Structure formats: structure tokens, C-alpha cells
Length: 206
Image (tube, rainbow, N blue to C red; front, side):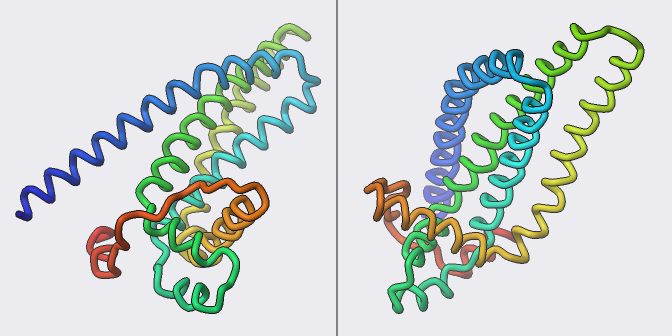
């Protein structure tokens, strides 16, 4: 029985991975082409600002994915009993942690990384057109290194924040989903078949 459950779990993970891969491919091509095209037409200062926002988006979704994956469900039941806005949605996030982490860390994260690379390349082309020189080469190297440093450093620091403040981050996202459901009628996550128990969650992390 345990082997069957393990096989089913592996199949679900494989199917989910394929689904996210197809989604990432389908979204990545048009978004990357559009972002590069737009970046080529932007003022350089604005383009730098947009690129920074893309990097911050990448880091932010990475934090959300990790926070939801490590958050405990129990505290939100107390909030749900008090009918606190966002508590039910936070529980849904935790019960769908694999999907949330897959979307936030893999789909959004990888697409953001691809877009930031394309946007960076577009900005470098603009710099080269303005005035090709040794200084442009140095600026290009420094700029690409800065993008990499912000992304890697931000994600590394964000992991600690996500783990330490998983409750607050998950609850904040839950309140956002509550607003979307009540103001726009948009249900982002459906209720899963059953909750994962705390021992399972802990064993899954170990």
C-alpha cells in the first residue's frame, strides 16, 4: 500500500512538473519578447527601474513560496474561528503548498530570471549604441554582475526572512486572496481534498 502511495505521489509530482514546465514555456516566450521590445524603446533610467522591479518580483515570489511551504496550519485555525479575513485563504495556501511553491519559485521565479536577462541585454544594446568604448564594456560587465548579485543575494537573504516570518507572510498573502475573492469574485485556490497533518509536514521537511 505504501509503495502504491509513493508511486502515486511521484506521478503527481511528475505531472505537476510537466504542467509547470509547459506553463513556463508558454508564458516565457511572449513575455520575454515583449519585455525586450519594450526595454529597447524605454528611457534608460526608466529601463533600469523596471529591471530592478523585475528582480524584486523574483525575490518576492521566492520568499512567498518558501514561507507557505514551511508555515504551520494550526495558528490559522484559531484566526479562522474568529472569522479573521484571510485566515481561510491562508489555510488553503498551506494545504496547496506544493502548487504554491511550484508556481512562485519555479514558474514566476524562472520567468522573472529570464526576463531580467533579456531586459539586461536590451539595456546593454542601448548602451553600446549610445557610445561603444572600453567604458561601455566595463559598465556592461558591472551591470550584469550587479543583476546577478541582487538576485542571488536577495534570494539568499529572503530564505531566512521566509522561514522566520512564515506566519506573517502567509497571512499577508491570505488577506490578499481574501480581497480578490470578495472584491473581484476571483477564487485563486480551491479547497484541496484533505489537509496535511503536522507530522507529515515535518517529516516532509526532514
